[in-house]
Amino acid sequence: MKTLKRLAALVLVGAMALSLAACGTSKKKVTAKEFKKIMKAADFDVAESEDEDDETVKQVWEATYTDGDSGVYIVYYLFDSKGDAKASFSASYKDLEAEADDELFNGDVEKKSWYFTADGEFDEDSEIMGGNMAGDWYITCVVAEETLLVCYSTPDKSAKKVMKNALADLGYEFN
Image 1 (cartoon, rainbow, N blue to C red):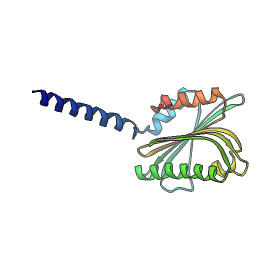
Image 2: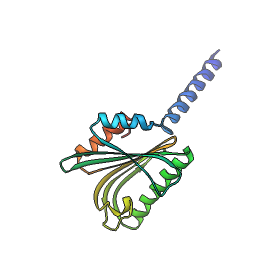
Image 3: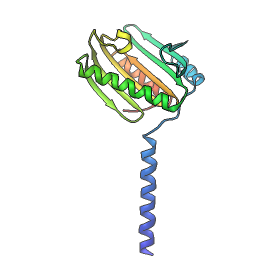
């Protein structure tokens, strides 16, 4: 009986560990309709766009929030497949690493399986965002199934808070 209780306890602990590990490795995607609705409710201007450089992108929506000198820009990408979204996520992170290696980005970077953040200064020669990133920026990139969210904000606390709140409203909370 004692052995059976220990075995049952081990099985339960293992199941809990697996469920916790699974929580951190993937997120549920937000549909374009949900993205538009949530961003508009958060006082973002939302417009459809397109990605002419990537034929695996099915839809692009841009959400912009400005308040004085503070600003947040969130781009929603819907890809053909999960693999395409993950490949774009990985490429974006590699681009950021390359910028840091080339001393075109100086700041802090954190990467998890489903998101990365960067907080720092981009050189005027930076190629991120087509070369329009000179200065201090806070960036978050989230991958969830076939979707990718790329978020940029000015470095002030109020803009970062707007971005984090918008991502939380979309179902993506992190530290």
